[in-house]
Length: 300
Image 1 (tube, rainbow, N blue to C red):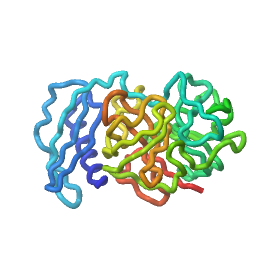
Image 2 (cartoon, rainbow, N blue to C red):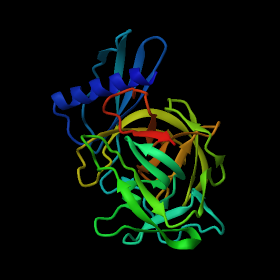
Image 3 (tube, one colour):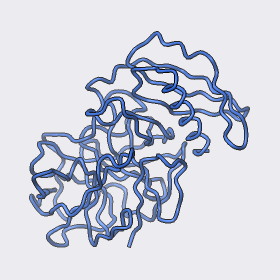
């Protein structure tokens, strides 16, 4: 269960900080067996660190014996928030989720999540284009272009990035007119609802670079997402498989029933299991961990 994974991740993160282990850019995912044993991957820039002693974690229901498995892989200049370029796919007709979008001041592009009237963190937006803040937001410019329409939207709001230790990477833009199919995602159809994701979910997305792909939700992970703060870890979710790439930031992550689970945010190209997304948190529901970077969302 995700809450047990979150407790293990929090305990391991605290332990590594207490003993002063450096060079960590990722903690998790966690794999828990029915017999109460667990493995937690620790991704590092440097090798030779001895973390062979087991960690005992009480989850409130049982005590888990956790083995820390260190994997060395340099992530220096490797982690990407997925803004790509120079030539995204462009389709004729009405815009929909999966099409490209970009702030006209950026050189790179990302992906439209969906169009809808939504509430995000209690703020209501009517007929809004939703994507990642690092795709839509620019400090000196609010113009957004997309698809065959060129400049057709203006940035209306973007969440602080990061915000109180959480990576709340979301923004909305207002179309000049109704040029979009609401809640329709290219290659997947109409979003039917939303729910919090869980480890083991088969996840789907359509991105402006890689198109339609599927992967396996590997669970919660701490990752150094912000290249300007490479020692700061944020709690997000990761997907196993060739799921997303540069230019897919903002793509809606759906389950097989077309429920919205989250938004693609970034990853490490070429490293399987290192494609990250921000989960949605339906209004009125509690997250598995208070530090989870998640989008509190409601369709209007």
